[in-house]
Image 1 (tube, helix red, strand yellow):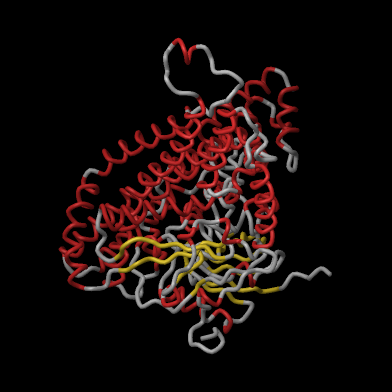
Image 2 (image 1 turned 45 degrees about the vertical axis):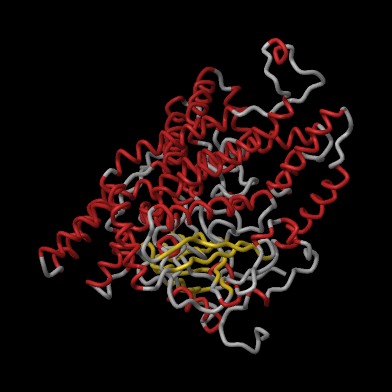
Length: 612
């Protein structure tokens, strides 16, 4: 049945047409990412939170492996009662996902017994297990940093003979490439080991409060755990420290708004001993804190602050000026901590029995216990580890470049990770045989075609959802992180009926402000935002932390109450509305808007003039 003839607000997967100029997009991704027979009967939503751009071929591994790990931890290890895992599909380069619910009461009950026993062990030993978790992930980071990509020179070193090693270096090419992939997989298993339990704790607490207080604002629940410092704020805190060092050393004149990082660094080099002292402090801070991705760690081209210092240096100029003016750079932690106790106490007193109050205390305490991990794990996993992972894959790209298989080391990211394996095998065979590799004739045209297709696919307006509306959404991550609920879906469905000057979403952080909008569709545009503007974007990433000290409010297309934009806005004490679905479509840069973080509403008060 054609989309126009059937009921339902969203197109079916089978309704989606290829984008002209990118008809061969399927060649970029493994067969298991394609929509299957029967998928038209299931609900899918576009995961623009993690994948706001069309996926380069290699980068699709950042969907494949995480969803492998999430489902394993959720459904097979901890046995969440109401959900299995998450499935993903790719269409026109965009990643769509669905969560598989468990709805049979007997099966939910059977799984609940196992979940309580297994999750209870982790909750009871959380601090110890978290410390052990950090040690494990740091070991993975150390291991991937230590991997050496073989040079494959003309002759092997004599030590291969005198040490009777027994194998040549071309063997190590495959072994070490596979080790990179294996380490990425293991990291994601550890990533989701504690994360889903963290989300689970929040869901249980929210559902308890919503049952006790049907009218309770979601934001009130979130405020009860605000004001807890987490490691993900450290990159931004390091910038603030560097700004203070610059002023104390008297080299703050080197930091001017709009200057390129290279110009600032050159000025500091010329400024004598004080400048060199600041540069030494910068180097000390950069490892590991500037291994934070400019995105969210899912795309190879979202380079880290260490590789691309444009974001941190744009913030440094502002922080230096604020320090010089005697302004306080801190987040209002003390105020948030007072408010969270007031909110918690107010609702606790309204509970009718001591049993309910005891349950409230236990659940709130658990939420506050797991909160530092829910946000902080991202630094170790999506940022520090993944930055090093992509850097190591680039080194394999350099090997392919040296052997003439690719024209640019970055082109390795336009091959599936399975295809990279084949390209490396071609080089291994070539080196062993003393003959040119055969891959260039096949791979170079393939890479060129894929680059062109990604440019075309970037302009495709992906629907927020595909398929029929679901009966139930029971996955804790879907609720907490993406903010996908029945109401969210109904809001998307009614989007065409909503006036163009209104956008509704989650009331993620309270307050009401007015200001000019700055619509950013990519992290690469972050430098455009001006002080006092209202950020409107598909989704924010942790590396955008310095931006929150500059803006009045944040609005995003996707995200739940535990999304990054929601958490950071609360910590900075500014209004935020997330999970709107359509903000970047309805609001334009320069529009005067009112953001109501109490009601979850954004209103366009005045349209910006349109250029020709």
